[in-house]
Image 1 (tube, rainbow, N blue to C red):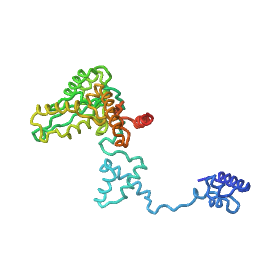
Image 2: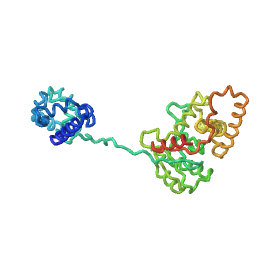
Image 3: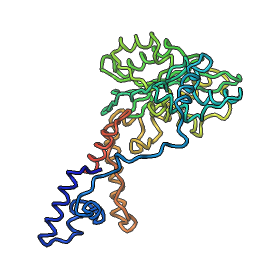
Image 4: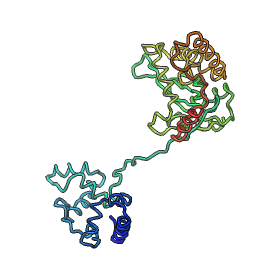
Amino acid sequence: MINLSDRHHCIELIDEAVASGAALKKACSILEVHQKTYRRWSKAGTVQEDGRPNAKRPAPYNKLSTEEWKLIVTTSNEDQYKALPPSQIVPRLADQGVYISSESSFYRVLKAENQLQHRGKALAPQKRSKPNSYLASRPNEVWSWDITYLKSNIAGWFYRLYMLIDIYSRKVVGWEVHETESAELAAALINRACLAEGTCRTELVLHSDNGGPMKGATMLAKLQWLGVVPSFSRPSVSNDNPYSESLFKTLKYTPAYPDKPFESLQAARNWVHTFVHWYNEEHCHSSIQFVTPASRHRGEDVDILAARKEVYLAAKTLHPERWSKEIKCLKPVDGVWLNPDKIDEKADINEEKVA
């Protein structure tokens, strides 16, 4: 709403413009005032004050009375209802033949009285911040790991597959199959993988979820001794650990995955050993320009993609009419983000466009 002094000033400016030869419609449009509004303001030669703030309005016919308002608050604070939300209180009152108001009115009154808080002993939902972002620009900078189940031939019994993956190269850098989950077994696996890859005291980042083996005292002590920086997902957010989840899907959906449960622990270990060799040395990974994880881990992907591009160029030169589009990008993937911020993602996209 525009106050009276501003209306006077607006009328004066419009009148001055019209007196100078401007059209009324144009003058009003510059000030963003409709012609009808201008005429209403200047009606009877005097600018009228806005009467809406002081207008008398009828009270809502369905408004709660003061007694009903107080009764809602009193009822909600009774011992039998103080730990219940309105969605539980209203039906229980109805079962006793009592109706005070609707659930929405209960919620509205409790909110106005600053009593619409988490009720009961259960912890209120907590907002958890996203894990830190890490950029892997070379092998053995950021690893991800998790545990998945492998079916055994005993109903309800599963073998546990521990698996480590380097997110830069997608290479499986460590794995083991056990009958149980424990921080001790996980710590031993991490220790062997770090020794095999030579990553001790290199500020390696190890990301995982919030399971017991991942956050056990033995595991955390081993990471500190190895100089490994731990990183954890948010509870119940699988997207925070996407590389391990994707690896497990590849493992369980590969055609070679057995249709029947594993007959023994050794059978499970033998199959995983075969899978890891295929995955690292033979599987052309789509996220790293269809080179194998092992070749990228060894830094051979640059030469492989360069040679592949020469083959495509030769084929295009031989039959240019068959190539309606440019040769798809065969540039090696530079860096791989773990849980990137949206700003970082946009920056990477912009850099690619500029390049």
